[in-house]
Length: 513
Image (cartoon, rainbow, N blue to C red):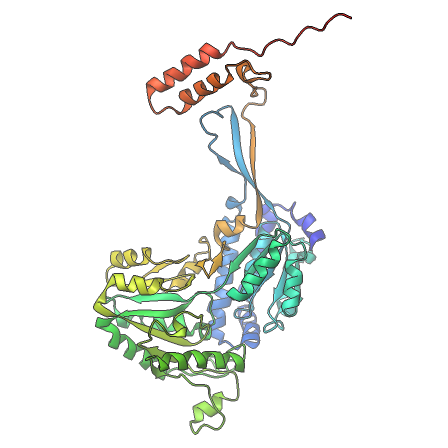
């Protein structure tokens, strides 16, 4: 990858755009194959893969091809008041080799997202994929290599490594120029510590518990499907997805009944071969099911009510649905209502198919904001109200890296011009948008002569050895350029004239032998 990047860093933006369009063409023409491979590796439904994997990847590639260059060409800046004979700019040069450690929840997009940004910014990339979703990379690597070959790019630009934690640690310590890590806070802390040993910069995206606020004047019927899609898209295994629903007391019962009615008609099971399945499998297997159940049981013990699901399917169950789901890695879509704030599920990331509904008493915006911000995660958020201005006022008070007004918070990701990332326990730095693209570059400040034959020189009063009045001359400069009054500016000019003739004392004459 390092050797291939030495050639690729010199590529033109025209060639990079062609690579993005080539990948985009392949994906759009083979979208179902790309999605089906992701389904086999993760257990999600074909619809979840099409909209959560393929659609967002196409938007990313289209954005890079159409507007990526304008964010990486040199950017000329204001020179400042005293530098009028100069021109200054910021240059964005490729860092070199990017290392990415990505999770299993979106096997296709989690690979093509960092690949596209790294290649467009002139870098190479080494990706460590999750051991839970490594089968698919054979197909995805062939796509990337073929597209690179088609545009004359080195095929070694993109490399994959597979393994457990030791493999990720080796990648972090390997000398890559930047690490992008998407995963849990606990592992993110380990990655940051390892990267610190050799001063490797890190992007950390560590998940969230996004609040979904429903004000008392919101159109419940109009947002029920949005709420359900937010929770059960990809079985809730989403970095940015609503996990905490803060519903005002006035409409609480209606909202709970409405989402429960939807869940009763949803179908869970193996997704490939049955397009009528709404909820697919849980990727990480039995241990993850036990984690979900522990969170549900804790919430119920503290007063939450189970409106749907809330159990691990059993082969011995008399319920045919439960016994059927027990043959695979499935957890039924679950709704918990009246969840107390002291429940573990109110603070711990679920990353699963569980909707947690909290009642906002008194229909108070202040109370909703307090409850929503009472969390260590701060990735994304959304607010729904019949009044757009009210929804925006509430959203502006939520502590989060992203926010949506009267729409699902994930809609911010469909605008690839926006950076993606959070605050607090959700991590730091950003990918996507101009910020993410420039984050893959070395940012260099450059100052040049505006007119080549006119150059700055040190004024005589400020030259070595000291004339004794250099400080007076410097004060005149400050008055002339920065005084906030005309009188001060004139004072500065007078001081410059007064002390301009001062020169360093002459060198002593050499004594005759």
